[in-house]
Amino acid sequence: MLKFLLRRVASGIAMLFVISSVAYLLIFMSGTDIARKLLGQNATQEAVDLRAQQLGLDQPLLTRYLGWLGDALHGDLGTSWFSGASVTSILSTRAGVTLSLVIISTVISALVAAAIGVWAAVKRGWVDRTLQVVSLVFASIPNYLIALALVLIFAINLAWFPPTGYTRPQDDFGGWILSITLPVIALTLGCVAGVAQQVRSAMIDGLRQDYVRTLRSRGLPERRVVLEHVLRNAGGPALSVLALNFVGLLGGAVVIEQMFAVPGLGALSVSATTQGDIPVIMGVVVLVAIIVLVVNLLIDIAQGWINPKARIS
Image 1 (spheres, one colour):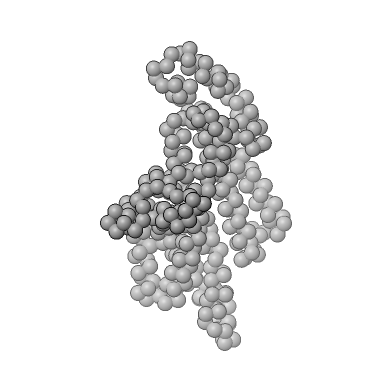
Image 2: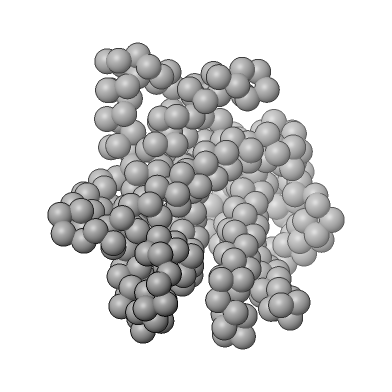
């Protein structure tokens, strides 16, 4: 198990290096005059040259990259070119907001999808057919349209939840629950459909295996056969889909946070990209890459625990 973890950690570190390097080089090789974009088209050439010198943009690209990489390895992602605040401190205030939305959505979708998938696989018939139709519908609807429908119904017409805004849990826990309910539902619905389909397919395949007939012939209760044996074997493929959905939820959070005025990484990345705040953009890229790699590592550990053969694959 230790070698399994070391291999995953080593590959994750290598992948983080590749992602951050490619992102940095692509940003600065785009051909955009960053200093002029920061100062505006009406700025004089002398002011643009001075700003480029202040930001170190007059240095060779490799020199700038190695300097950024050295600082990043020491935990220093630089400062914002607009606010002057530390990128690390900016990310620390925004990351918790996005992660709360994504983690809650992932947990809810996993639980609901497992229940629906198992139910459809065991009952079959109209339950299974209904799952197929509902999954196709929700997988086809963009989450921003779901968000609009939720706002119209539950925020504007029924006035059960605030249409926009975010309340910190330390300020008002009840208000926090109300402020994240609609964004979480908008993120969760599409995710549930995909994972439920995967659980359903894996469960159907598992119920046809010889070991299931053996367990039943020994008089083991059907509930134990389904939940303790078949569901565990079906967990591996479902976890892989769940990991992909987690990454998709991070991307979906960009749109949802904008729609609900939630101050998370999505809103930060949009504003930083619009302003051309490169240190913040790179900070978001690195942080999201770390989050994705950590999630994939946890999924690999869970799959290795569920299926020991995965540790040597």
